[in-house]
Image 1: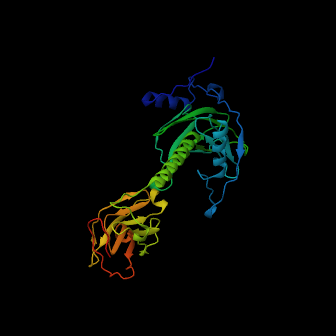
Image 2: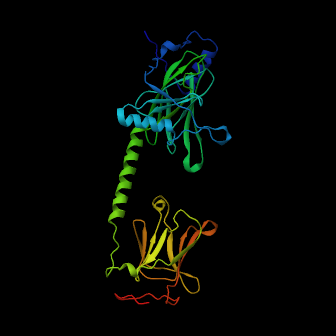
Amino acid sequence: MRRRATRIAGPVGAALGVGLLLGCPSQTVLGPEDFEPAQRVVERTVDADVPEIAGGFELVGLDDPALQAAVAEFRSTGKPPVVRHPRAGFVTYPYGESQPVLTCAPLRVCEIELQAGEEILDVALGDAIRWHAEKMESGPEQARIPHVVVKPTDGGLATNLVISTTRRVYHLALLSKENAGPATARRARFYYPHEMVARWKSARARARAERAADDREVVATDLPVRPEDLNFRYEVKGDRTTWRPTQVFDDGTRVYLRMPAAMRVTEAPALFVLTSGKEKALVNYRVRGHTYVVDRLFERAVLVLGVGGEQQRVEIVRLPRSGETKTVKPRRGKTARR
């Protein structure tokens, strides 16, 4: 008949603990047979070399070719593989597709790395007497990576581990072995094939929608614009930012700033018109797709992002056309005069 170990807290537990240490007749000796053995999951694995980066560290992330290949296989077969990194000494498991198995040496820690940004809520060990678990974190404050380290106190032990976080629950099997070979997993990471596929599909759908919106984009004007009315004589100068306009022109009434596609994933700068005293003044404008549409002409304007020493500035200067004086005044009505 299988014996069940019960953990007792408080003074009574402390007294029993002293009794066990002194060899009381009531001592209960626990062995591997007291716990349900973890069942190894037979699954096909993919060996992958880990790219090295400066400092001797090894980097595995969503841009890792092995993980990209694993997710591609999941999309085609519906079965994401386990990715082994023998040089780095860890295994990357597809979350929710199988139960990871860690094999630890006695009095040596095994490490479990979770997804960046997750917060560990609780850690539960099946055998909290002969196994120890502790939470830890790594990485910068804005991208902390949670870890759990576990350590067996003896060999020949088997138990399970449950980790609850702010995003999901992890279930792992733990084994302890005196002489664990290099093929056993002592460090575990996870990738999330369902989420990755959904994110990639969403990104592609968003890109298609943006391209379609750009194709349909038509800036309404009071009168049809003739090609000869377009003026491209603008100079763009200042910081080499990711949002620096790629083209500036006007139709005699409005000014159009074509922005790079990279601005869709960065903070958009604010636009001001510069007065004759080089002071910033507010101006009506709107953003359509990749284009800033300014509702008036100007001589000089500036795009600003950030404050203080971190501020980035890009200045836009209207150059005079042939036969035109430098001063440009906002015009009203439907006709354009120079």
